[in-house]
Image 1 (tube, rainbow, N blue to C red):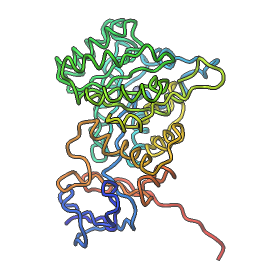
Image 2 (image 1 turned 120 degrees about the vertical axis):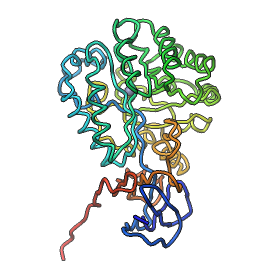
Image 3 (image 1 turned 180 degrees about the vertical axis):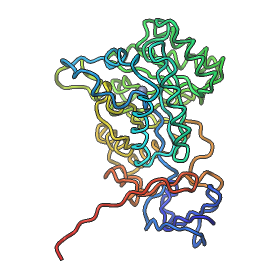
Image 4 (image 1 turned 90 degrees about the horizontal axis):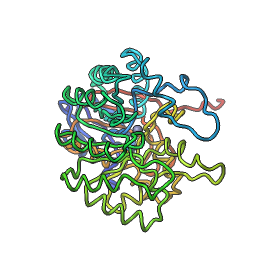
Length: 408
Ligand SMILES: [Zn+2]
């Protein structure tokens, strides 16, 4: 074999291990004990997974917090704050910011990623061009998939649909939406489903952020997913309004989503930053309970969404931190529930993205991350860092654990 990761605790095989993971020709060849290999890495009983997966991040508009004025008062609209900047985005500017963010994703153990990407007459296809170059330049470290979407409206913004179609024709595999920012939200959702059918692409929509849970677009998305038999190919991101529903009502709705094949990405950082701004005290938290959704059969992931922009002026692309944030806000403590959250950065995210070759199994690409923890629940509870990352069997990242130097 080319490589063996020795003494690994595979995240997907709790209780088994430590085991050796053997790699040959960029793929996992076998999982067992005592393999001979040209190169070896001793994981010393640490957790190993098939790479973390960022299912929802905006690389194209990351790192622009310094271009927007500080918010005045509690009410903010990140979309109208950002829209005027977009005409000034050049291919080089988008590439440089997205690259800086992508490199943070890499050092935090991410090996697969779906980026949301805005397309409209202000930015045209410049961000798309930058992202395609970036995906190509970094394919040694990450599989980067592009989801194109209209952030500033579709039905109210002439020229947007033509540009989206151009991107789909050039190979964008996923189409998104943001009906909240369309003057006719229902019409946008109808149109997005029509385009997804015509170009046979998956859907990944921004949905149901706001303070009124009696007005939710998820019901229309459910109806269209069932009518057009798109089950397994539809993702709803945010779903912050779920946090305003009583648990029994949410559980019933979750079972409908699970039956329809609609997955949910929860984005704790942005929802915490944006929700509840209609109040000046006893602020609602606004983060959907991913554990409850998953317990009712919904495929869920947790992701970073925005990094250093008007919608979230924070971020270090650390998915394990995102799961810890979710646990903290939702008051999740049971080891099994923390373990479920780890799954929402790994195997459940792979399922949401319809990846067929993810995970620690012979034949899959040798995407491997050693995390400085003994178990998934420890990784989440303590925000433990990755120490080493391989993409298709090649070492892409090394991080050293900190050392103390007591006096001799
Ligand atoms: Zn988003």
